[in-house]
Length: 476
Image (cartoon, rainbow, N blue to C red; front, side, top):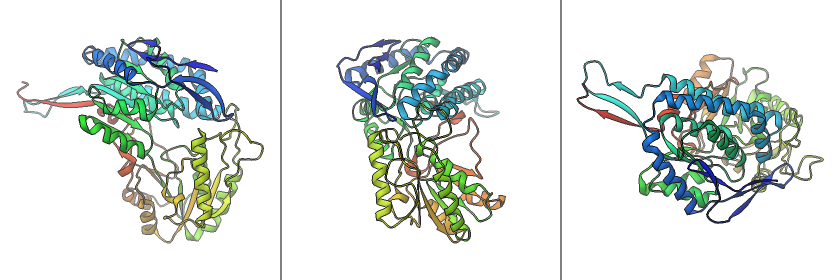
């Protein structure tokens, strides 16, 4: 069992001011795998004071100085690939192969891409030819970064790296459920030699350190990834200090599959939702199928779900692991039962654990058909390996069903008709659209509409989130 009780403040690992131990649970075994501390006001204040003091110097470093440190961090990250994979697998239940190829690799990809974007970014420029106005992009200040458990290092690097790149200082609060990847990343920050106070880490829960960060008068910006419920609370807590709030929240993506879709569209849609044990905010959890292929799609989806293996996270191979915690397990079980009670047809999976897995938070890959969009399983973010299949008559009805949600993060469309695909993509009310299984390239913006949040992460958009824009008149 790992002892990870210390926080990283002002360039060193320090003991918490008050003892408040928290057990980190391995979701495959339900056993304690690490002990961390949950911070208090004093710890948060100390970290914020450290970041505030460091800002005056760090904000005035050159782009080349920051690039040099980020490139060093990138090399250190790559040398710790196996360690990162192991802790992610242990803390949140990602199978080893998936933890390496998807989770750990996402962190490396973001560091590499932000270095590329920073090299080309102009922090100062003339407004336009003939104008004496000058535009300057300046770091916003001290940032509070609150990250989730489902893609831990992905979200940490999407926030920490652009904050560092733009000259901001920060306090990071990883999820207390999956904090180990954040603590390993902090060791890398320390090894890279970033100045004292630029980066600080305090573990804690949302009610404690999370609330302290969002309401702190010396924090200029909060970037949060997590539930819509928590995002609303953070927005309210931040209101009194008028700080910038960037939110990447939940989703309930629609995946429209037309009769002329490519042959494996249904199977790929099932794989997409089941990957990461369904714990992805932009997963296509509602599959909308044209009626003429509805019965065929049900069979294909059920066959695919029944062929997905579920096993321990520590194992290599092509399988899915557990969901992250008992709270999540119980929530998913409740929603599966609600689908049955509301009259949806269960064609794969169900409420029981997979055969042979009596311990751990394992969920059977589950598929419901005959779902209407007003059922709980179609409206609420389940965040588990559960798919709802909904029939539609025509293109307009499919778009209406897909958009009939409070969320707007990612939507999907499958058709061989390129013009139809583009037409549908433009009508989706979401921050991302994925056509025929294509994924986003590094450096593209990620974020949502409506209750899926505000702001964008990734690429130049990710850098701009951490910058204020200043207009200087009479520069020439």
